[in-house]
Length: 399
Image (cartoon, rainbow, N blue to C red; front, side, top):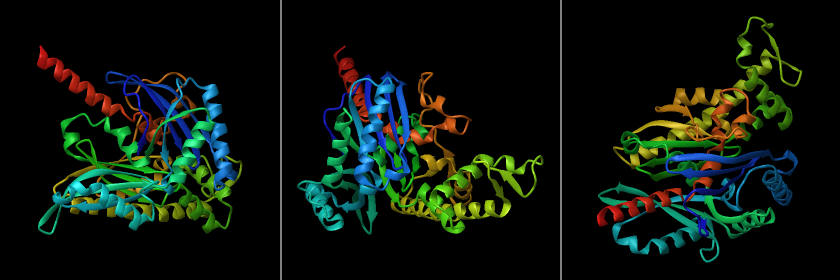
């Protein structure tokens, strides 16, 4: 969305994902096609500061300083992203004759749709492709915008932590970028890829084809909705609901064991999760999962109608919500595409103190919650690849 002179080779900027529940930092280095993780760290955001903007900002500054102090991060350039709750997204269609007036059309849309001021607020757009509207073929654009205060707050947070803002990106663009590098086969390039990040409060859906984003949707459903639904059904606090959800997740495999009584199972906090409570938790998570699955299904339907003839074969799920087995089961039952949990660090060279060493078990080893941070650190890499390709072509012409 906003960049200030990114380096495009070798050492990448620090990718800073200021999420609702956690703050993640990762830095990559690129040598040819090999991507290495130089440093990565994560801190959970205290529940007491999540809803207080100033307290949250102070916590973020302190957390970033701590991670910088104990990590092996190099340099101070950082790329962060606009929080999902502050990002505004819409699509608009322009005829070929209107292409010269794209900027004017976008400025008008920002005012009418979002009530933003194009003179000071930030906006950018992505060309999604050609679509047929009646007898006309028009160009569909994806407009991304946010207010000035949001950008100002992000920059202040970064600078107070001792870092230098190299760019402010959006979660949809970072998410797509983190997986775009894996689309190397021609068959992958020709098919539509769907990437879904299930965050704490929002789910971001991104469709891409041929290395370009073609559709973006923000859905206001995320991991917090699972917790709130459990809390409401049981009449307990959000903290207690979160503990029950984690207990159910941790004990799911053991619940079927004959070694334990049929009606109860000890939880991680020393309590017993009886069968009826377990069923209420499962039903609550399933209800939210079904709502989210319906919204994603609508995205698939819109895409296939709008971009006719574009095949969608699979959807890759990232974010902390991608570890929710109940959600994955519902998605596989309701969606018409193959469902997989993303592995954004697959193929990367990981040091011994990489984020994978902080988690136990194969599922956590997927590290799908790091997708956005990885995409932020990779910002500018495609530009570098393009420049290298152009340089090689020029050299070949001279020889």
